[in-house]
Length: 114
Length: 114
Image (cartoon, rainbow over all chains, first blue to last red; front, side):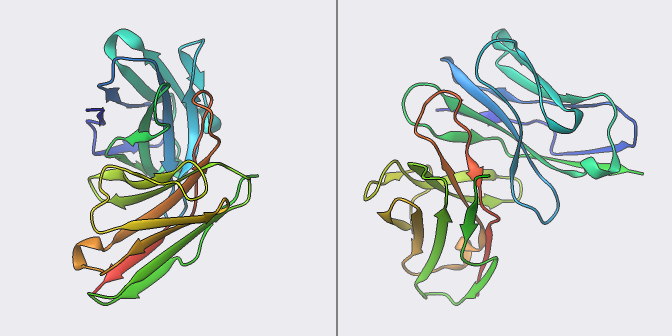
């Protein structure tokens, strides 16, 4: 069965620290990959996505993610976090064949201390 | 901008009541989805629909049903609400393509079943 793993459940960083959130998936075929963010009290919104091409994807607010096919990973990074990055981050995977369903990880809560 | 709206932000119901959660999207998307979001579990797919009057079970359909009578509207029904259905419910919509396919989410309905 398809699964998505986010090993960090809660990450606490000081402002200006670098961030890397891990995401691994189990499906062996061609996939689309997403990172969604949910700020406190707000709805889920897309941070960045990968469909094909350059495995290093840049998203909004200075975030980027790298798709490493051999490791089945799609880790999210940001070189210098801000207090406003405090949110919950969800990795999601969609197979390019079959149903257009997203499989979500369990989420990582990021707290940035000013 | 894609807009996905949900009928209520907060809802409190009693055990055994029939509950309707409504979702409307304004971008003529074929695909619509219902998820529930629980702490530590991420988002789990309840049901989805690829077209009017079509529905498919997701990962956790038990205790739920859906209705898609019009393209823009997707309803989630709890036939007899139970306390373990207390959760945040998220609706999403997307285009039908398998590639370059992003889901757009509504603000969520926080349902409490007493």
